[in-house]
Image (cartoon, rainbow, N blue to C red; front, side, top):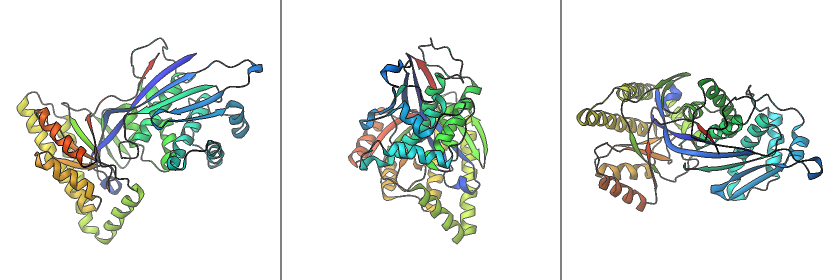
Length: 387
């Protein structure tokens, strides 16, 4: 009986959200909040004992889903993909998988999980076929709040499934956390992107790339560059718990751009400059307290400027403004991250900030009904260990 554990980080957009759709540069980074997956592959049962099952446990939700191997084979047919060659899920296969998910009777209040469960079934059967096994998922990330929880799920799931497949030749005696090789990570990333397509339709690929490789990336219309931080960066992430419709927010920015083309073109150009400057500052080394403080002050200014431009795009929200006002009282700089219209807000926690001040800010934000998470920025990507 083989068992593997995998963990993959969520992400934040440090600058450039929305404007990136209109040709601007954006900067994204991994955070040290992860989705954790454990995968146990069980030996085949003797014929007289039946055929076993494929099981998914979402611990945080208190839900368990199970399909017999014979049922999966009956609905999906004999063949499944070679795990070393990621393929897109065909519309026909999506329908068959959706029918298998419907059989599980997901509670109405959690019906939004259906796409994630479909993604699980597609990735499991494509990589492991109908072998009996159990996958258990837990997460540090609030779901649907713009922190890349679905990509983190896809990457950690794929990492675990591939680790026990013929596509990888890994040392299963390793009990410490380790990273795959670059080529193996590329394979994980391509499979995770296929999973993201099932959940989101047309993902950019940014979230799964950051989750797979970790660190920070600068990206612009298909060009993606990995960047290295010259000094640690800490953020307070405030989840406003206000849900939002990303598609509607993106469409709203495009409509505003068509009504005011020149003004909005200037806004997008300004965001492009902010992202490039931010990227340069992040990569510059900072040796002592004075240079670290100067660096952080510049980052704070750029964050405030970017937030002002996001307000120009019409994607702020009353809850976001509450977070901005609260952190400003303590002379801290904040900006929304992701689609806006709710979701999460980033606040830079300067290196020399007394912990008592950070605690006061968190207490005040908590009292507004928000959820606060501290995160190190630009950390590790997918990691695996065998238990």
